[in-house]
Length: 114
Image (cartoon, rainbow, N blue to C red; front, side, top):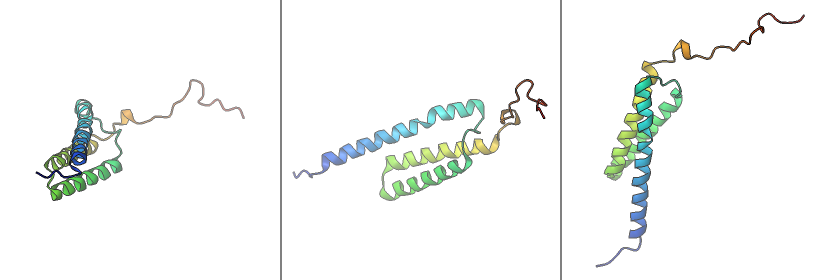
């Protein structure tokens, strides 16, 4: 039986890809829990979410076209998580209570010396 020269390197690359994908996918779990509890997505940038959504869709298309099931699953998970962030961003806009208000120190109003 002939052993391919780069087999060990391919296995290492595949393991690294799988581990990295799991870590990246796991990164979404605490964010989703926090988002679900607070219903506040105002810390996200809407433009960034659209770019991330597009990138995850392109990643899925690539993974599906190469036949990599694990990468395709990761792409779908990533797309779903970012779509959820975007949905919360649109459904629960920043509350007026959370908007930055100008900070006035005591006695600063009308204390201009002319």
